[in-house]
Length: 115
Image 1 (spheres, rainbow, N blue to C red):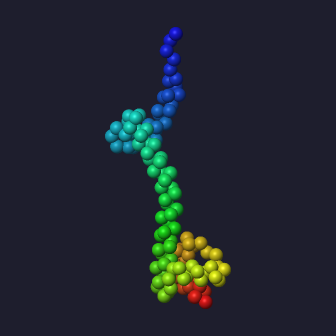
Image 2 (cartoon, rainbow, N blue to C red):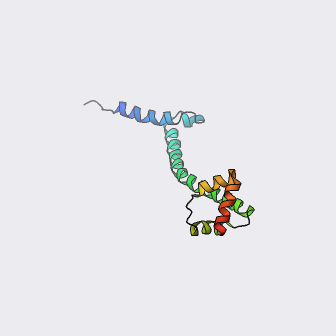
Image 3 (cartoon, one colour):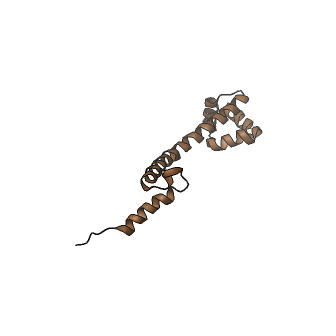
């Protein structure tokens, strides 16, 4: 009985990894084994960093809000607590945008949080 291979599927599977590894340096973009290892590691990093990206942006927004609060003689925690007590629901992304681009509107929010 002749030897049976699954050549079309195997070729397609290998080609998928080699296409994903285009532009990689040296052997990583040309040989299947190195390309597969590099692509799989890259996919793992991409998955993890999509989660980290959300954390890092939230940290950045909090730093910007805190800096703007300090310019208005208030701490970040007291500002957020004051907004909650005043029933103002603005997310941190919007607050950071206001702090960065519209300091007058942010100063009014600080006064509301103080009162």
